[in-house]
Length: 159
Image 1: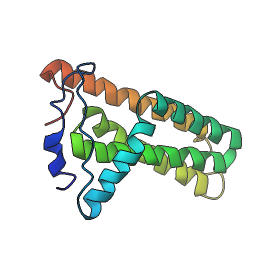
Image 2: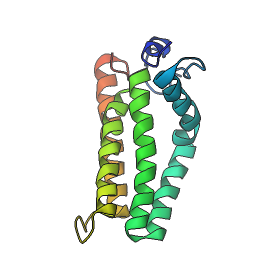
Image 3: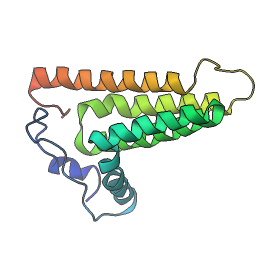
């Protein structure tokens, strides 16, 4: 079973608080689907819920403590990890917020790496604090869209 075939095993996508969430990815499969399922299974518990909030705060705080380009690169690494998670999760479960957060986080991380790696004073305004603000804005936009979809359709997933 591939990552994409696993979409049908996900919950109905009811409103949050109704116990609706995506089923864990299957432990079997081949190739990219197996790697994607393993990535979701390993990173999901760490990146979601209270643990996810702590990891996000710690990542941005560590990046700010290191400072400069190295700190921005460290924060961008975290944003890349969660961006990949959101994209894979959207492909598997179709959670609405992941349609916004996945690409948004990856673009945010790409800009962060560009600002960290480009020599000279290119992108001097894009630092760890700016990346954290953009991260929170994308997160809020994703969940706002999910609430709008849920209010209209009664589901928090895109089918």
